Every structure is written in structure tokens, then in C-alpha cells.
Image (cartoon, rainbow, N blue to C red):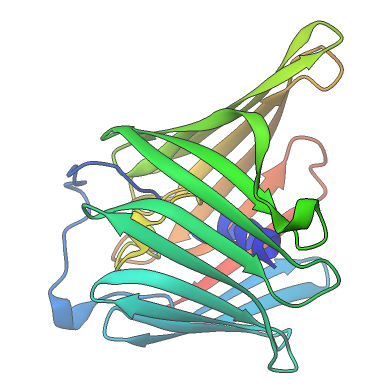
Length: 267
């Protein structure tokens, strides 16, 4: 479920963290009683549609309900999102994510797979080396492996770089395969308009999605699985309302231009 949510984050969420106190002057802050928030998002690919309906308490997100019958429920402690619980269509909990903060910044994320065939826990530790750079280390544990002891995922840390409130680069240095250092790098570009999610309280402190302030226009992935660095590009085109928030987004891929995702936002 965690991977599904992160994929959905790439499709519709925009998130950053540790972006300092930079503000975008083109996007004025609205009064507290006039938040613009996404109420419904529909992602269409061919004949398939993925719908999500958002419920709020003020500008705090309460839940997201999907047309699959699944549901995500959010818990706040003060102004901080401290837990996300993900439920299956039958109402049984499938997974949950708990967030820990220090000094107003996210320092750890614990994801537990509760339902399914393979139960496990995934912990990510974040180190804020500056206001624009975050290093994260991942750990995993399974009850049927090594007595449930936690082990580190991967040999090296992943580094994320932020600018203007947006995630602009994610770099994961890999190990050696056949004498070649493996590369896993993602670069992001953005517009200057408003992200649909910029007014949701606490979203700007979470780490792992893309942008919270603006909207991603290009995503370029570089890796070298066969010792040759290759780049795969995803482009995003938008339509906006009169307040500078996207109402439609079309997502296309360099590998297959025939595959297109249409995302529609209702506020």
C-alpha cells in the first residue's frame, strides 16, 4: 500500500520539506477562512479511472476515499500530521505510517504493513544537513527474517535537494556492478503556479513526494542498469483556473507517447 500511495503522490501530490522560509511572490497566501483545497481528483488512463475524494476539517486533511473502496485516514498532533492509516475496501487496516518531528522538521517515518501476506516495517531516518538538502537512510524488518531484527536497506544514503519549496533532485548512489558505479538520479522542473496541495496544513513537512508550492512540469530519471547511463523523461502540461491552480494535467512519457494520464482537479 505504501508503494501505491507514493505512486499516487507522483501522480497528484506535490510535496516538499526542509525548504526553508522561501515564499513564491506570484502565489499570495489566502486568509484562513478561504483556503483553496482539492475536493476531488480523477486520474484517467484509457478506459480506466482512479478517483479520490478529500475531506477536511478547516485546512487539516481528514481522509481520502478512493473509488476502489480503499481509504486513507490522517491524524494530527497540533499542526503536524503524525499518522496515516490505510484501509482496504473491506474496512480492515492494511498499513499505517507514523511521522516523528524535531524542531518542526520530519526526522523519521515508520511504515508498517499490517495486512497482506508479508508483514513488515520500513523506517526512514531523515538528516537535515541544510535548509535545502536532506539525507535519508532506510531500514527494514520482517517478523520471519532474523527474528524480526531491523536491517539497513541499501549501502548508501539517498540525498534530496530542494529549491523554492520544491524537490528538485533525488540522488541515490548505488554500489558496484561489474566494476561500474550504479546511478539512480531523478531531476524535477516546475511551473510558477499554485500546487493544488499547498494549503493543506502539515503537507509541507512531509518528505518523499515532489512539490508542494508549484506544479511539476518535467521529471527526468537517469540510471545505468547495463553500464550505460540512460534518461527517461515524463512531461506534464496544465490548464489553470483564474486563481492559478491547475484544473487539468496531461502526463506523457518519452518511452511511450501513446500512454497518457489525464488528471482533473475539483476544488
